[in-house]
Structures are given as C-alpha cells and as structure tokens.
Length: 234
Ligand code: NI
Image 1 (cartoon, rainbow, N blue to C red):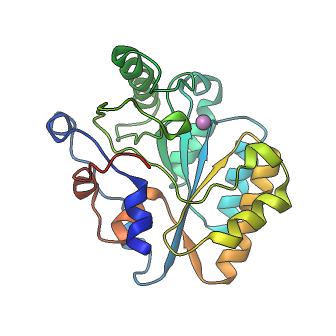
Image 2: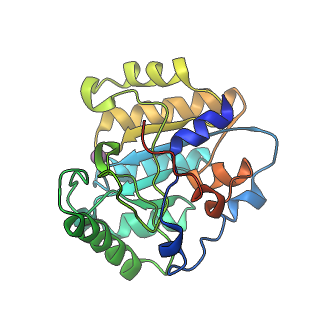
C-alpha cells in the first residue's frame, strides 16, 4: 500500500531530456529527518496568494512542518517575498504552469511554454533548483514528456468544493496513511485552517510533515529512479 501510493505520484519524464538538466540533488531533509518514522506530504496548488499563503507559512513554521507548493507563474512576481520565504523555510517549490493551463488541451509547444515560463520566473528569483511539475487537473497530453518529475497526489479532500475547514480536515484524516500525498489549495482561508488542523492532529499521532522530494528520498526512491516510472496517469 505504501509503495503503491508512491507509485501513484507518478514521477515521469523523458530520460534523455533529463540529462540536459543537472541532476536533482535529493533533499538535505533526508539527513535531518529521522528514518523509520511515519511521513506525509502536504501539497498546495494555485498559489501563492497574499493573505492565505503567508498565514499558512506562519502556521507551518510554528509547527516545524514542511510542505510542497506548486505555484502559478503569473502570481510569482507580485508575491516574490512569499516565494523566497518558502524556499528559505525549507519548503519544496514546484510548477503549476504559468496561467493554470490544462496541458492536455493545448498544442505541445504551448504546453512547454506554460511550464518553461514559470520555470524561468522561479530560476530568476531563486538560485537554481529543479521545479517539479504538477499539471493543472493532473492531466497531460498523451505522450507528452517533461524534463522534470510530475507529481500527482493520493488524498484529495476537494477543498475547493466545500470550502469548509472542518469537512476538509475530516476528509483528510479519514483516509490519510503513511506516505500519503495530500492535495490542497493555499488560496482558500478554509484550506489553510484545515491544513494546520491536520498537522496538529497527525503530529500528535507521530507523523512527520515532509516535502514530496523528501518523502521519496525517505522511501529510497531517488528522483533519478522516479524518472524511470512511465506508468501513465490513473
Ligand atoms: Ni490547480
């Protein structure tokens, strides 16, 4: 079950193109997080958004919890301070396209541009790094290849639908298990509340909140190995 969850993450990229990019260095977090514990990864899409993302960062810091943020490129410039803060506080930063474009409904060149424009914005703001991709709606065109790992999820409380912190927290707590990757959106105040509630509860149960990259690393899956999975979506 645990490995299955990791496989559902579906890290996938074209090995040949990967060579053009410098190797992803496994998170240093692997060294500071004790082995053999229960781990879980919170992921937040569609930000950054002032007023919610900053409150979330405050709450995560207070709880010493790490998360992964998949950012929309066109929101980076106006929230550059929040993005820098994410990086400084040990969170993983990923790419959610420039304008939240579905990547399965556009020409391949347009899809690449949506991804690369956000990559360029992040590279200009932060020093280097590799920005893993979460495609909007989890979809990419059949046969599409990207040079970074693609990250899906395995717990989706549909926070955008209910906008109810209690319901969202409950939905997560009901099906979370070690190595779950949880999908949330840090643009809703209710999702921030739910996330912090979940952190409080699961930390009490002995869970550690890590980034996606750390989660893989802690399970012995390096990004390089992850790229070998070409299992498609579903
Ligand atoms: Ni999204």
